[in-house]
Image (cartoon, rainbow, N blue to C red):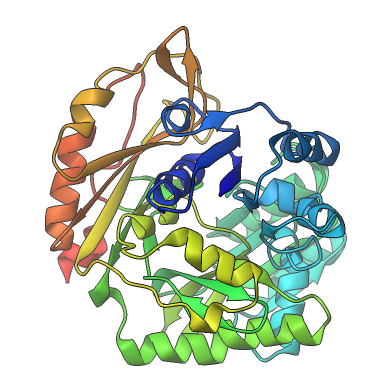
Length: 423
């Protein structure tokens, strides 16, 4: 099979890496790909926001299966267009992807289908948002309605901070684009959990759980990012709780989408807060998480292609997943200044040495290959990943790997997995 993977990040590098192991995959093309993916797949340029350019690539590549990695191509309706042409594609339609692309849609959907989530208000003007603020205890969460690359969720400790966040979102000063809707939400406390599932529109199959580290600073301080590291262990969640989440959150979500004539086929990423009241949905994503995918796929022992095909063909219930026991960990090497402004084009050294550490896989998240040299090309640059018998072993290996790598201004958190290690 010839497989086309859409995307350019660490998630896509991990997908290509996992697909490469399938005996049925003869060729992988990645659009646009990155410096690391180029070692495993043929990379072709594409504008991920441009449906015509995306379809041009699909036509030129003529893949047997297309896998859509990021949210942007989903949001512009790539899956819909491919389905109209009778092409095999893995990912939700534009309407189904609204679970991610519109926070207000997702909150109202959860309310309609009795899926546990935080109390909220959807506001269409700055004035309405300011009037709604007193309904919530501090701290309060203010969210951009649309896609914001992990930067649209603001936890506000004071009323003044909340008012500033609201004004910044509605004026466009905060994210560079004007929000027409803002969601205000009660602040939940507890352990966060990334719970990813595959769906064929009727059935769901849970992947191993993971925990992301969103804040830039150690001890979970500072600004929110797209994710600075992640770990996955069997011990993160009891089997009974896993079943509860599948039966009371994941399956009702897929059932609800089917009942609303927007069947959900693809990856359902449920961001959970494990509160004293039970698991509550913080957000949905409608694709593989990044960097969760890196930590999850190094633990996968069965064929990823088989599982994805089963989703597209509506036979997920017949598919069995096999997982390596133990744990995995992923540490992100970021550009200095991220999630604010940062330089690109900086040469990276030590990649070969990192990969020589037994058990380390370096997934490229924001790199380019320029005249034979791998250089930085994003905020999150590399995802250094390792599996191990225990979380301590996986973390030790990942940190041994990242210690070999350097580029100007490189920053990484040295406390990934700290909450689990304290227990």
